[in-house]
Image (cartoon, rainbow, N blue to C red; front, side, top):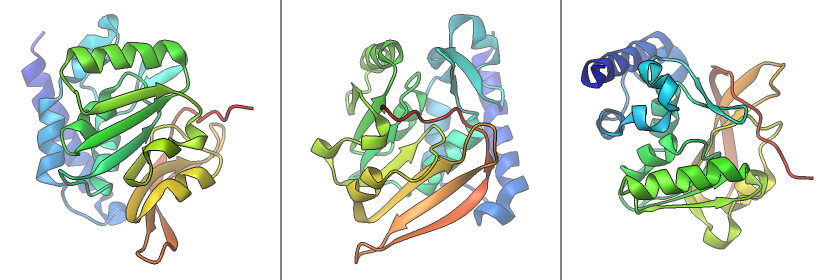
Length: 220
């Protein structure tokens, strides 16, 4: 299985996706640092072994427990919209297999990632540790509540669809920070939203494009 060839095809698919949606996302290309991270992180190691032949297809793939790894284009787009730098402290809600966290780890100083399902949280933590992503810390918790002990965050990315923008996440976003989050229910239309907080603490949101994510479940 020629992963290098498939990885090049994945990058081309991302570039094509950006071109097709440029009028929606407001840009013709993604940041070079983001695209370099997409090339470097071995996506095939973040999917089940029986799905590795499909790891680089531009679509979501199941990772067990009713969860998915997002399509490469969406991972790249969400990462790009955060506008990270090497000093950024990032919160990810929805660790899944750990793929998005690994991409973030290539671009930020520190990544904190929350996963609600214990089996996924444990597996992702071990996988990221074994692969040397030592600037990622994970925990098993309710993503709606964020990670207040590590706040505030320069950027927050949510990789499951919430019914609404969680107030705790808005509170934990640093002034000048950015959040990317899908909003909507699974059976309804979902929108990928960009939320920014200005220097005065006021928040502003805009819709990027329609998406389809598994739901972000709030603990009762």
